[in-house]
Image (tube, rainbow, N blue to C red):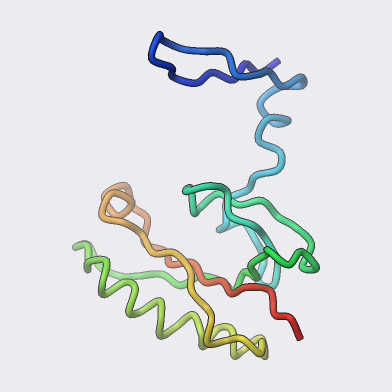
Length: 130
C-alpha cells in the first residue's frame, strides 16, 4: 500500500492510497529518456522529464524525436540551449519525414538541472494530423 500525502496549511493531509505498492503508484509515468524514437506520450504536469506513454492516435500526444547531448562543464544559458534545440529538433523531425517538422520543440536543462549533471535536450513534436 502506498500512501499519498500533500502538504496543507495544517500539515500533511492524506490525499489517497494506491494498493499494490510504489510500482503501481508510478506505473503510468516513465522518464522521457526511456522512450524510443517515434513513441508517443503526454506530458505530466510541469515535470518535463516524466511523461505518460500513449497511443499515437491520441490527438493530444507528442511524438518523441530523440535527444542530443550538450557538452561542457559551464551552463551555456537558457537562450543558447533553446536556440540549439530550435535548430536541431526540427532536423530530427525531418529525418522521420513528419509533415509538421517546423513545430518541433522539446526541453532543455535548466541551470538547476545542469548542476546535478543533466546534459540532455529532448525533442518532440505534436502528433501530425496527416
